[in-house]
Length: 293
Image (cartoon, helix red, strand yellow):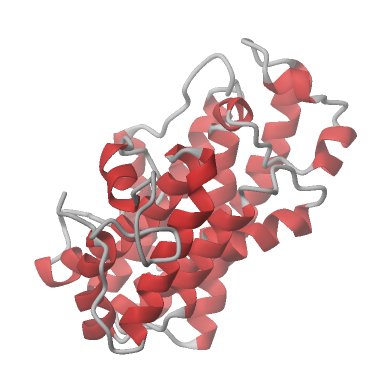
């Protein structure tokens, strides 16, 4: 990847960590946001790839960079975002790639800054006591993606943004259900503590090699609640046309297919890797596309 100009955490000089190095070295991870669908025209795909690349880079810094460097690197990216919106030239490759998308699609700064803030908070917050607390986290870490996508398609109006928030929060929670063991290994638990207490689960249950009955019940509850939240946002697809409808239907289908896979796998998320079947995803995608919800 091209040189970053040795940007320090404050955007001015040397640093032992480098934002572009982290983004380049970190592995590409599965997400429930299939933003780079080959079915979309290049004019949309390149903007979605730029936006998703930014979001993934910020996440990778929050997870993969040396802990002592993370806040400084996030500050450097945040400063580069401000530089773009102030009319300056960004210094980091990830923001350089993003700048044409921001300009062409008139995307406001707030969603990008919220993604950075989400990863700042993750450096100090690793548990969520209530479901309300978890949704507040999704407001920073997931919902901005939906806003950015709608801006890229020129479809961002308040009613649609509200429905999009429900979809994105649901997708984030479904992904947490899939990755509960991996997240625990990173020192994070996204399942609300109140729900763990309700199902008589303790943290040691999430570190086990096999999925105990209490964890299965817990994940079933979280997944099913997320699926209902997803359904409440799904009418967004029916308000859209053309390629925007195609893309959003794909996001909804991805969440539904994954929730169905969790159910088929009896919520055994610790001893197996539960993933949606491609055939199920395609069938669900076509159904959402046709019904608009």
